[in-house]
Amino acid sequence: MKYEMEKINDHDSLNESVNLTPKMSTSDYLVSFSGNTQSYCVGMVDMVNSTNITHQMSNEKRVQYYEIFLNSMGKIVNRFGAIVIKNIGDSLLYYFPESSKHKRKYGFMSCLEANLAMIEQHKTISNKLLEHGLPVLDYRISSDYGPCAPMRHSDSTSPDLIGPPVNMCSKINRSAPINGIIIGGDLYEVVKDIDEYEFKKAGDYSIGLKHSYPLYKVTRK
Image 1 (cartoon, rainbow, N blue to C red):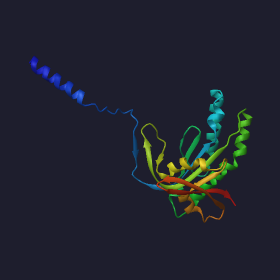
Image 2 (cartoon, helix red, strand yellow):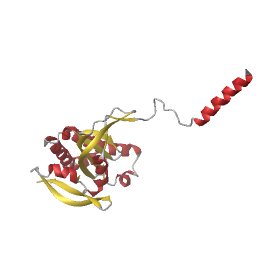
Image 3 (cartoon, rainbow, N blue to C red):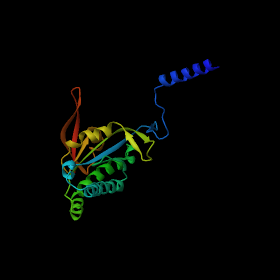
Image 4 (cartoon, rainbow, N blue to C red):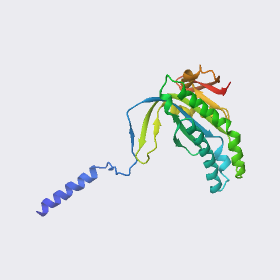
């Protein structure tokens, strides 16, 4: 009997040493995809030089600085039907559900109008910062259009997206003029015939293997 118990214990020890894959607990971070891919307009507004501006601020002032910026931008994009996906410290990522209806201009115009509204509120936001004893800020806005997959996180009920326009918004943002807007070629192809806006070629973004992606600045006519 003692010998058999020792064999069982040795067998259990062997299993424990072989099974090195950690077990997932209910608190582990997990993501899930709905399986439905839709094309959306996605946008990003990103503060310019925020690290250098805020590094000497007190923590209280720094929090207030980001709070005014993110809340101001969030309110504007929400007014035009956008859903905020996430804030990434000094930037805000958002998308427009109505833009999935590609035959209707409304969702695409909402994207452009929201972006322009943020630019037009620059002075108002800067004045608000000055009232709180904070320095003015500048920002850049980028947008693009394309297929996205909705994603959910196990630790959040907020929506998230993954797809080319999400990645491209981040990559082309620095190509936007300060307090201006840049859009990718895929979004341009959809909105180029809308009369209310003026589009100017603003160079290309290299996507490797000698391929480039056209970029355009957007203003009102």
